[in-house]
Length: 565
Image (tube, rainbow, N blue to C red):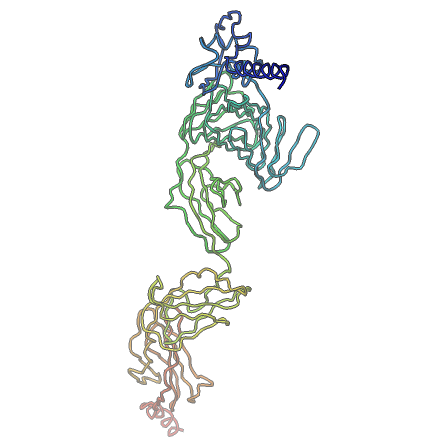
């Protein structure tokens, strides 16, 4: 190797070593490390508290959060940071909100149903799921419609039917988790689930014409009445500040306030309690579907919502029901979550009662017709009859002597007609029966109402207890009648009773027939029960009306007259 090559090699190695040594030397801080001293502001205003993490220094924090990163000297002075290059992790820094970087916050139309319209200035874009909403957008819902909007901090708003909401302000402080949201409710009602505040800069406000509700970490309802001049604020969790006319009310959980246009908010008062669950059915099986409203002191009406989701963000039906009247429902069979709350006269709505309710009303059950409900049956094998629903492929019948039908005496599936007669005699006593429909698809409907009847012995065959003729009258006496019974008598010249000579119905067990000529006749009777049941006629009996023993005496005057002539 030549000397020149050797020298060049040594020079290269020496340069590499110098470069490597330079890498190991500490990097000098930028010129900003030794700034001109800056006095901390006397009153920085509201601040956001930040917890320092490993690797943080005054410069990367300023570039990350401040609208103008060159404010880092003031930030250092405000927090009295002595070592700007190495701030101990866990240190709490105060950053004025006015210095933070604001940017537009996201709002998303998560879901909607029914007629929902969106206005964006002069444009009318068609709403779609997961659509990004902007500041100034107006969302309107029609009758029986709803919409759910999600915000950057995870808060959600459920907009009810016939409502109008403007997104007036949607901002967030970059990377802080703090949002600044303002909504203008111009019509209808909304429900909010607002996430807890993560800093002093977090603002969530609902504006109505009468009042402003400031919310953080709260489940809240806000509604306008039909005149749009009175608003109701109902707080379910957390605390809400309601302000109007320079007056602010703090409204806690379970409380509410009403604000009229041009007036201060009313003092908060407790919301109506939830309805008693004991007064609410958990199953509906009859068409038309009717859900009775429970008694609740102070409630003029109720708001009822049925949904399949536990957030009630996609209601199947929602309606206002006057107190004392049932809710009329038109929903398909299935399982639902129901939510009910009372409404006071001034529109303030109470606490919710939520419960599960099943609708199982189809196919509709047959209507029992006979035996008569709560009636008496004398036949040992009575005929059961019912009306057949249009969609019935077959009918199932159960007959038991207990109302729980734990051990039915008769279980008759697959009946295709409208009548059924037992194959064996029914025992004396009280019986219960019910019916259900099976449609062409094999769907089995609910049981009908239970009908009951009493199986009793038929009345005894009327028999003559005494028979006499007196002064040309026939008197027939039967055994005494039971209370409520009547008797029908018939007398005929022939045993077929084709043309009865005499017929009478009475409550007395005796028949008096005047002027019946002497001769042979046939007699029969039947018992009429108080419930209208008529027994069969008794076996015909022949009776004889004897001539009067005094008829020769009647001829004496005629004989004397003949002799005198």
